[in-house]
Length: 195
Length: 293
Image 1 (tube, rainbow over the protein chains, first blue to last red):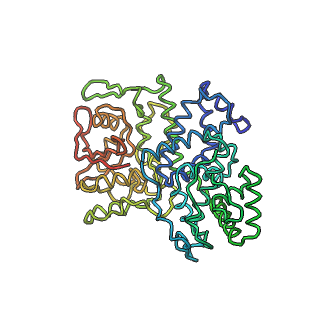
Image 2 (cartoon, rainbow over the protein chains, first blue to last red):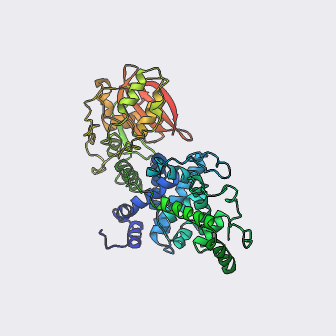
Image 3 (cartoon, each protein chain N blue to C red):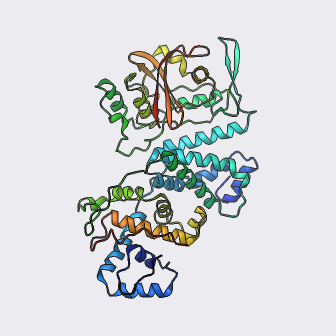
């Protein structure tokens, strides 16, 4: 079972009883799926649980895969759903964030030393976003997945994905104190979701 | 969406949408762009949005930790085994009581000696936190460091099971030492306490303590045999077929004990400390605790 066998063939082979096919498929994609789960859930333990749930679901559901999406899209959808299940079961945000600062002030104190390594605060800010925005940003900006594919993963129109990303980035820029120039908090307003 | 009033500062979200070329309204987009072209403040906001995007793109994706990979392999192997009942013998031969206990196929996620043994195969962990958790047992009990995740990224932090399911059912039970090269079982006996049992078990499940890495007291060593352990777990769980999330050996307040961490109700783990006589008809229970997952 080697690399030239494509994902769909592997999934079909698994559904037909090939004992190795699913393993090959998983090994091919699990690093990316892990990254999605980790960035969506914010900690390794939840991410591992979600990924395990997702892979077991995929293992069982392979026979029902209709092939109307790419296998990777289908796998991502299962992983994202497992993550959202876990978020809802957990019933609390991954990392609570402080309220935005007063108008005219950055939301978080800016420390020139911290700027050298902002990954922690970026992760925190990401974790503080509403889950729909967070998932969209994880897939589009962190993972670099095309918007059209993300729309397929999440089962919503591309316009919805774009608007979630735009709102998420705006909030993130504010939370990270990137929007320094003017009073900003009143500019990032809750909007009705587009499309 | 609120229509953009020409001349006004567009809000940041609107800027973000224009920046992405996704406004879908050419006239509105042109009006925003016209404003931005003459507005340094809005251009700074655009730069800030771009910075946010770059910050996200720069969130390096860590590779799948080896311990998690092993756990996923194990879960899938278990799933595969449950699909092939002919290959996975679902019985535990109990010579003492003369009965053969059948683990329920539909719910058992851990039903063969090989799989049972797999639960004992322990990750070669960095050993991070092992000293810490047991230290905390010696102190007042107020030390909550054991409950905190270690901040140092560890390739194995997070999960404890690293089974290699290379053997079929019926293979000889593996011993706990396999896979734990880094600490090899030669360290201090893992000392659990009744007061901190839940916390210590949580550290075990989170991989902050390496399960099975300490010496096994002879009184409980028979529970390192997979079939004995399986029978003990079946007794403790009343045959629910639940698979331990972690198994460790050491002492509980000085008494030799095996520590079994099992999925509990809701989002909890059930932690059982049992003595060396644990088996069919007699759980040899020393202590029980529940701890949040």
